[in-house]
Length: 71
Image (cartoon, rainbow, N blue to C red; front, side):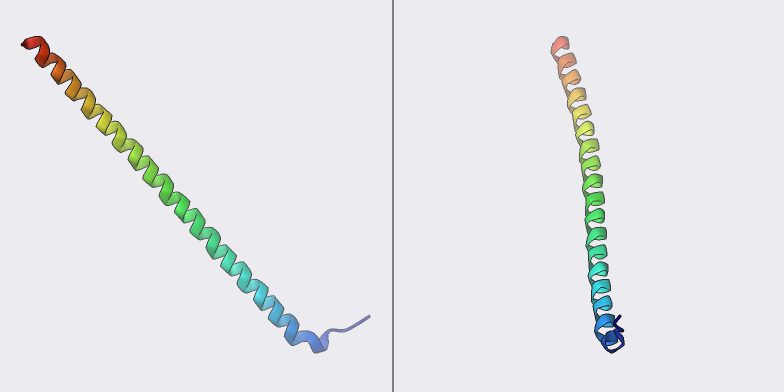
């Protein structure tokens, strides 16, 4: 049986080091999650804009078709 009383400072430093590593990994994880959220929001916006553009093209096509039938 061995007491690590004399190693307390080293053990405490190791715990602090591991906690700092964990905190950094946690920050990195949240950065990745936030970036994924930004990417999803940008994709949704692009999707909605493409639908708006498609609708504009459809209206222009219908107007051109009507103009062709009138003339």
